[in-house]
Length: 400
Ligand code: NAD
Ligand code: MG
Image 1 (cartoon, protein in one colour):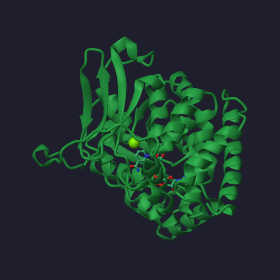
Image 2 (image 1 turned 90 degrees about the horizontal axis):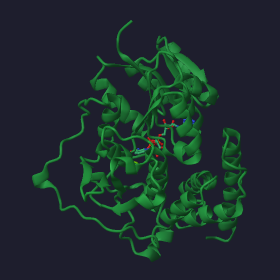
Image 3 (image 1 turned 45 degrees about the vertical axis):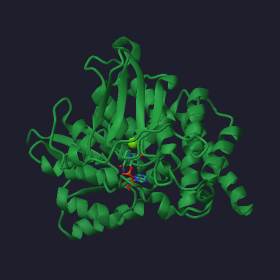
Image 4 (image 1 turned 45 degrees about the horizontal axis):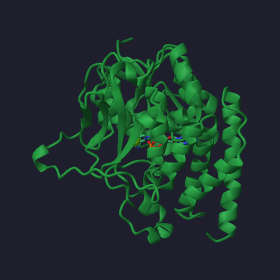
């Protein structure tokens, strides 16, 4: 019908999904929204269907899908509504779709993101948890099926932009890279007195100083587990050994990450903290597109600061590095335990400081099934969730 690139957005009602639609809307001559998906936000997906007129809308929750179908029918909109998790995989692999934005939060995104990779799509990866839980399997799928993997996470997108054009996944040494420097703001509790941390609330944890994001990643940013997950993500994306990845606290979030070369040069990517920049970059790559983000005004910037991360304050960062060093299923277990613990914190069942404790105890108690197949990954994920839930119940009964 037209020469537009077909796009599927997994998790279109979330923070990244909304920013993606915002960029796509500016370039309706180049992109066509083919499929939108959400968990159970009927109103959000209904409104998106009215404005973006996709061919398919998927709700992971079947009851929500039924409601959406009724509303679209009543509004006279010819959108095909599909229900359930397997339909997410279907719309990720549609023949008419060339680009898939993977913006579901958490492990729920793994199967559809993997389906996009196996269908050889350009995968715009925001859903870092998918890569953390199934790194080797996912990267193999990308390679074997000729998918294009473009990072959306601002740090990894920044690193990607600082790599030489001939960077290959064989290793950093071939192109003279010494280290990857991932920056992180340190979140809302960077300077909070340590004795106050047990009592911080979910709303305080979600009030990130520089970014507006979904609640799960906001809590991860407050514990710095987000940076830990990003270290693991960088390991898989750039074939970087853990010792060559360094975390730098940079409270202003102007430098989104850096690459240090053997000759002493450090390349950085800068910009206002607005996810539309990495989204537009990945949509347009190797070209460029206007994103709608404000431009940096250097004369008005506050001074840029840099610090080493404080692992006593942020034990989750240490746990993520050790899970990466341990290898095997440890990152899968770390990710699953963290998801369950963050949800328990958001539901006010455990304290903020118990998140790290639950993750650590789960890592100590789970004996993995092995990490080679999707089945073992899903089994380890389920086992870690059960053990984490047990630890949460224990924490709650001890009143901690
Ligand atoms: P969000 O909570 O705002 O949105 C999540 C989306 O996933 C929603 O559309 C929701 O309906 C969908 N979803 C949730 N559970 C689901 C399930 N079980 N089945 C199907 N769909 C489900 O999250 P977000 O902030 O947009 O983050 C999305 C992903 O992007 C996360 O992995 C996050 O780590 C990553 N990311 C986000 C940002 C950001 O600025 N928000 C930055 C970097 C990376
Ligand atoms: Mg990030």
